[in-house]
Image (cartoon, rainbow, N blue to C red; front, side, top):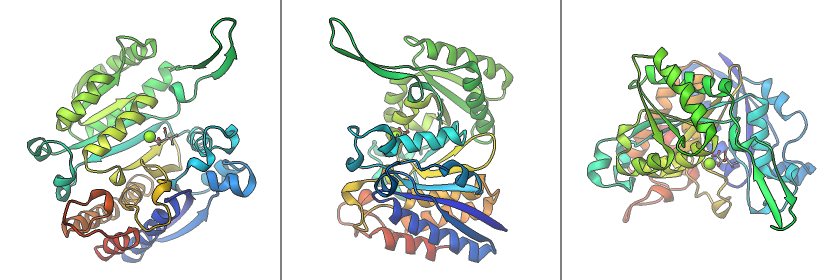
Length: 358
Ligand code: IPM
Ligand code: MG
C-alpha cells in the first residue's frame, strides 16, 4: 500500500529523531511492501525564523492532504514567552491540534521489560509491571479558554485563564476511554478535581452516565492529586486513565518518568476523521540538540502507533515495538536510560540497531 506522511521535523532534537524514525518506517516498508511519500511541513520555531510565524498559512491543509502527521518536537528558549503569540512554537502546536480536531490524545505508559532497572520506583512495585493508557482531552479546557490581562484599580495587573468544558466535549473523550478499555483490561479511571472545580463536577456526571452504558467496564473516579500520588505508589493499578487537558499534560509526564524516561513515550492524537498526529510526548530538548544524544525511541514508537491506528497495519506496528524491545534487551542504551557501568549509544546508533531488528 501507499501512504502519504506529513513530517513536521520542528526544533531542537526534532530533526534528528525524525530522521531515525523515517529510516525505520522505510525499513518496514521494504519488509512488508509498502511505499511512503513524505511531505515536509514547516512549523514551530524554525518557521518563525524562516518566515516570521510559527504556524504558516496552509499548514493544516497540507497536513489534511496526508494520511498521517508525524511530528518531532517544537519549541526552545529562543522563542520564549516574551515573544508575540504568532512567533511562539507552542501556539502552532495548539493550533494544529485544534484545526485537525485532535481531541483524543493517547499516551501509553509501558514499563518495557528490559528497563525495570530504569524505573525509579521500588523494585517490587516495578516488578508488578506498568501498562497504562493515559487518555488526555486535547482541544478543550484551560488551554483553549479565554485568557487575558487587565489593569485593576487597586491590585495592579490581573491575569486570567478560563477553564471551560461542554458536555459534548466530555462525552466524546469519555466514550473513547470506555471503548479503549474494552480492548484492554476493562478499567477506566477518570481523573478530576470535582471537590473544587465546576468543570470537574460536570465531567464526573457525564462519566457516570457513560459508565452505566458500559457495565462490562470497571469505573472509578480519582481526584487529580490522589492520582499523582497513586502513580508513584502503585501505577500497576491503572488501565485507562482519562482526564482533561491540563491534568493530562502533567500526569503524562509523571507517568513517563515512572516507566524510566520521558524519552520512551509515544503519543497519538486523534479526532473523528483523518489524519491523526503522532509525536513523542517529550519536548525539543535544546540542551542536547544536534549532538547525537537524544533517545529516538519515543518517536519510533509513535510511528508504530501510526501504523496501528492510521494505516490499520497491526503486524507492522508489532514489528517496530518488538525491534525496540530487542534493542533494549540486548543492552543498547541512550544516555537517558543508562545505568552506572553501561555503555551509551547516540541517536543514530540506536536507530540503526532498531532497524537491524526489523
Ligand atoms: C505536551 C507539551 C505541550 C502541551 C506544550 C509544548 C504546549 O507539553 O504535548 O505535553 O502542554 O500540550
Ligand atoms: Mg507536556
